[in-house]
Figure (cartoon, rainbow, N blue to C red):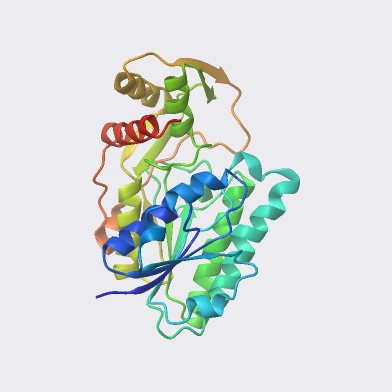
Length: 316
């Protein structure tokens, strides 16, 4: 059955893929984005190129802090809240207000708008594995104590708590998904895989912060999108779910895979670990599997090949 959907952050990496999946599945989608300058507007506009040609997609260019959110949420069955100020390393100092505004206050305003929306069946919030910080054990399950080590992680956790509060007090059917390092075609230009692949293709140095033995649980974009749809259909309001790809490897091993794909060596340089970067991440997805039916389908080598091919094919 066709659903009326609202997707915030629709021009971003995950948001644009989500909108495309919803439109292809026959849903009507309103996407909202304010095109922040965290990275270039033309990149985001290219993410929307196909969508803007579709009659069942409508783009609203507006800031969530200023938009008429009650009107946008009204009549929607599903709301997917992907909009956020990204970046762990950029969240320190005076810039923290950007994170409190775009990640916390914007979420609160969206939840306020959702309070009186009788048609609303699900509000899916894009959270982050950053809320765990340096977790007590791996793989990490949802009941482990959150202890973020970056202001960015603090802002994502605060928005999670708001989702729980609005469900408990007002019945907003909010579900939070804790993404573990999503990658794939259209990945933000500041993210590691995009930077490493671009550097290899350019014959430029690949800069690694730390010794490269830190691990990440990498999640391919199509798996993250599938998780959003499953959460909208089956998620328990007020709950949080880990969304991981099951591909936990070291950064050094990831570079080795990229070298195999590219057929050339990477020029790797190691730099000091950055404040706010966790040493390891690893998702226990047993709850997502039991409650949502979520299982990652794309392995790390297949996913890296797809991202490599996309970046190589879109170079100017």
